[in-house]
Image (cartoon, rainbow, N blue to C red; front, top):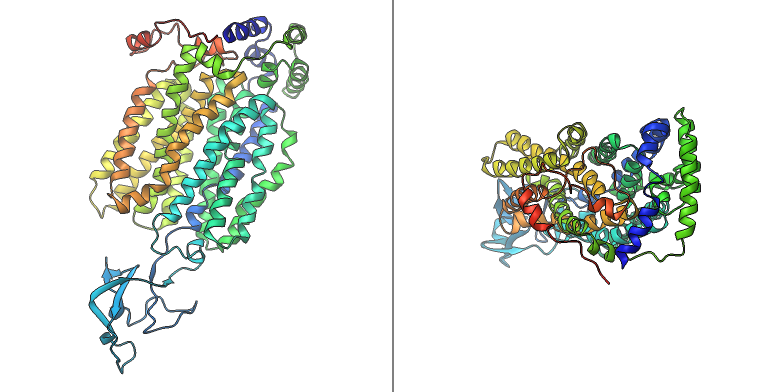
Length: 563
């Protein structure tokens, strides 16, 4: 039933409007008008990235030691390495223990802080702590020797993302990309409130609310960017958006390195987004979305403005087609719109893609964020490591742009996953003490998974139809957040279970996802699907798949029809 309704609606207009042809032959696929839209989207990506994942620096583990009441009383100016420290605290890894001390002997000694005061055979946990660095939430919230609570913030944040994505996707597909973007960017108000928070519990609650409201902002920006350009420029638009995210994250780590008080950094990173909110209304709504909703009159105005700014003009045929599309939509406006889940189950290939793409997202998010969080396991300066891990994303996105339109989506994704998996295996085999060799292999793995980031965003968006693109993209991203939820815990896994456990998981999931990519159709040079039927037909007539027998087995039956 729902399949027949959707087919009637799509067939009534599919031969009237061809937006890809209009962009290519009349408006221009990537002219001045599109560049203006892309510039605004790029600025949004850059500023949003500045405020993303900054908890990594605010809650970075600081060197600590026990407060020794027998030798000192608490003061913010306490010497972190007094001369008597070896008498009271056991040695550990070339320094002294961060979380334990020698027990008191209850002996009255005449000398100040005498060794007789401490039982070197009995080691106990600290009751109070002294911190080497006091410029962090780690110090102010007293998280010494707690490996889990600082990393739990990331997991809670990604749970907020997971809930946010389907809600925002529904809003974007029902009421428009621009409205959804405006609502999600308003999370910057919550981000700034964290400046006044004085407890760990309050901070983690606000981190969750921030993600719940603004977690899908980048998905909205990304969809808006790729829907405004022609098919030849979708990869470039996607790579540009992800590159500006990488630039923002790199600048974030550099600014954090300067030693500015962490509460001031909250305002520096998030306040600029408040200014951008008022600039959003200069961004036009997605023409593809407007057409999918039958709003041809608004589409006509935007396309005419775009053609004029690009130095072109719409043909009489296009203007006539837009008018006919409006008339046809008026005839169909009283028809009930089928439920999305009904449509998905009625189109077997779309259903298969809805099962397949989330695993790519789980893998890429787990590895991408896991490698970022696990940068603390590399010896050397934390800020330098993070800067390198973020900076390597920029050439990764550029490499994805160069290769997406040359070797195709499938080969690039498979190669990216497999190279990343191989790097994890090699990294585990490098002996301790080879810092630069380990860092180079680590960054090569991050580079390859960054290529996957751009490719998987573009590829997933191309597999789903315009009317439901944001909903289905954010659905894949939502399921993928399962990987992102566990990614912040990888440093804790490394210290509590096995040092190399995260890298074993990264390698195994990367190799498996690379295989699963081969089951999907190639979308290089293919018209962006506007209807469910067009999305269902992707790859139907392709004979290039090396897994053709398996694909034939999966799709040998007719599409399901729910009644």
